[in-house]
Length: 257
Image (cartoon, rainbow, N blue to C red):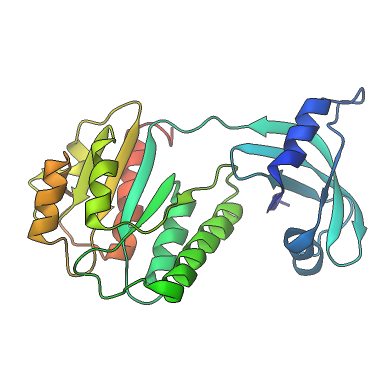
């Protein structure tokens, strides 16, 4: 059985590391309770002796097995190994224009499974979907929940950040601080597959809405150093373009080696 992943408070993993390994070679016990414990016990029905991974979502994971189950929402894990993954280099951020319907969650889910490090919701001028007030807060919470669950499903120890929504003007500073920036655009003269990539720093990709990136937005991005690139001969939907581009870059940068 492949060990499922559950989220614990980072402080629990810090305490385990501070205490250190026991003479028997383990790292003590960690309790899993609350919503994550309920999912482990009542939904996944984990039993004593089964493998499990507990993570803080920030790069640290405790690997062990269930040693006790209490009620419907609590279990204890005997930790046999603690691992810490370094922050990936280069870091890949995708600026994702707001898609229609549930395609936003689809984009977040698949980009997370692929390995993106950060996702920035973008209110592009041609977006049909608008995030305002309570509706916007709920939509952002759903994107973050989707990223968290997809990270657990794909057994990541370091979860992607989903930032607050940004406007085109707010993106300018973000683009200017990246080591490499690219706007995915069907009329881009250069293929992303041939772009010179940095070994360190942030790689930032901008994915436009179904209606495309407007000329004014392209001009603003160009002023911030972001050039238009094409992915290939076909035009992908906004919910799949970020996934394809992320996969391409993960292969090219050696992060999938």
